[in-house]
Length: 589
Image (cartoon, rainbow, N blue to C red; front, side, top):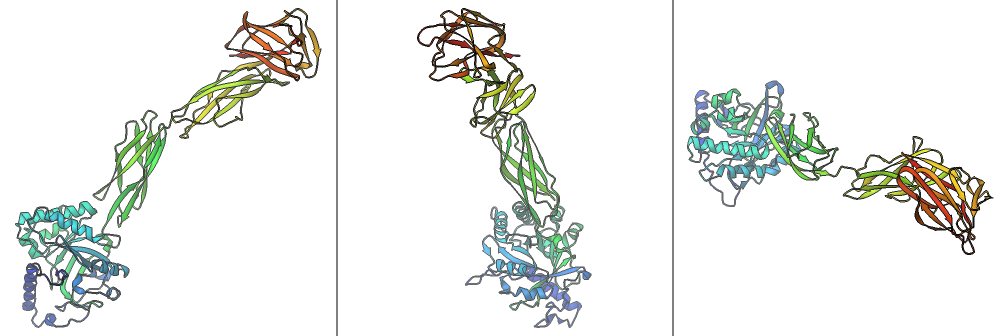
């Protein structure tokens, strides 16, 4: 591993590299005995060789290895373009040390290496001790420093010191560090160690390898094949091998550099791989369905992410779109029953992929989704309206209510079963005039939209027949003197009139609504009106100009029945004339 001297105006001690240095001397001593005269003693190694003279393996798939290096501030400024030109495909870069030291070349080296197509991996030099939560503090410091991204390999724990801890205590320290890194990044960090250190200070334990920490970066120099501790690392063997602690690589001019190999031909298999979740607030209306977008951020993560959601209110169901291995988004589809109370509900979305779990919070807003309450239109006749030659004016009245308010209403009329839309005078009226043909079966229906854009169903009202009885019909009984006036202005071109006090016209009919049609004018006068024998009021037919075919009196009964309408001439003053042009009525179902 590269030198572990923090940058400072006054250099600190080397922080106990003795274990590795001793191992290095032992290995070197062994190599000298087995290979007398070796070039390991050369003062300036040739480029592409290690200090011991062993040949460097280039990034050639035919060898089964990919070549790389590991560096720190110890190498000072590095020309990464030249490093890349030598075929080095990856570089482990020191990021942090202990609980507070940050390598001031880390971000510079990381950016330079990645800019030249070299994979990078951050490593943390561990300084275990018995201080409470020391492992957590070092792990958090490492995570806060390394800034993992798509061009990074798995982060690495550089384990070269025991800190005086017992084997069980160091095992616990390492496991705590690794689990904290995993909890914060989703990555199972690799472990850098030597076989001698692992056996002596970690009890040659394979527990971490068996627990899924499968990536081992073994330090074993000047051998043709490294020794792998922990039962060949749980049967998996080494992934990265630091085979020299002093190599020569173009682009690195200060000090020698550690040389490494990757066992394989695709570094992506050891890349930092993670995913994250983010979601936008979703809204669903009562009785309807809605969706919320769930974003899946992927960094070298080619695995399916299984999604689940908790916190749904009673009466709602939810399902996710499929999340393919390359998918970066999924929709959370929610359906809400009409009885789900409106409000905001906090949800937790959980994603699980390749043993990694991530969560995100999102609010589900259940909004009013119930349309307004609408009572179907009632049809009746109103005074002061004008009948046509083939139509009569009918007043339609309905109601609409909603807690959010009514934004718009709509009305349709039916003539003998055929529906047509009625143009309304404003956005949200609840009454309107409708012109309907005489002699038809008619009806109306209404609907409304509230201020949350919920629209009700059409609400129909009762149907009725539109009828007109001319003044000469046998259902009208006259007393006193009544005369006929022929005029095209009247309905049917004629009407009856009387001016003598007490003259009367009694109309016997069946229906739910009735109207008396007469003329107004300068010589018209007063008439008393009786409905079913009871006095209903006095009508004044006087007007400064003649107005024919006017509905001058109307009565609505609510339901069809047999009735009488009696008109009695008052016959006083200068304008005593009262006439009968016709009677109109609705005969409701």
